Length: 255
Image (tube, one colour):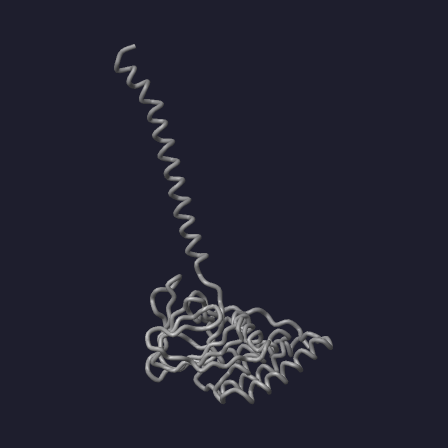
């Protein structure tokens, strides 16, 4: 065999080996990139509370998933690691689901959301804190699910309006136990209302959360009108009332 043919014969398996190595490297890199993407998706923290009152141009961001500041909106969920920047004269009130802790902040202030309470950044500004009765935050915790049904939920970092809403079902028949739960919620609402400030919507949000579970649209409509009287500029409440009115009408047609 000539030296030239011998070199060609030796280079064929070498070329195949190089192709196999390149294919393995490409596969490893693709899996690495896929893993990085999955890690980014999984990096979004869990929801820990709700913004129950907001006034002024309050901005927020989160190093884990949203590094560009966005404008905060009423009734948006809060996540661990959210940073809020309150300018002079602005107000922010949040309710933590796990700790029943309600915090009211007044600007100028900067804070970061924790698991069960917030931490002030920079200046030592402290919020006004109220520990809600057991179960009160559970009613508030139902509000995000209600907003999703109405197409008014937070997606990513924004408060957005959806276009499609689920069809209302026929009015449900409440058991005696369910009726008792609603009655307890009404009593708890009255107790919360007596303790809350006039513009604090936490009592109304609590009652709305319970009523929504049992599709009590007529009573929800009345609660929302009262809530709007307490916070006239809250556009989410206006849109939510329109949705509740439409569900009430659809339910009435099925009777």
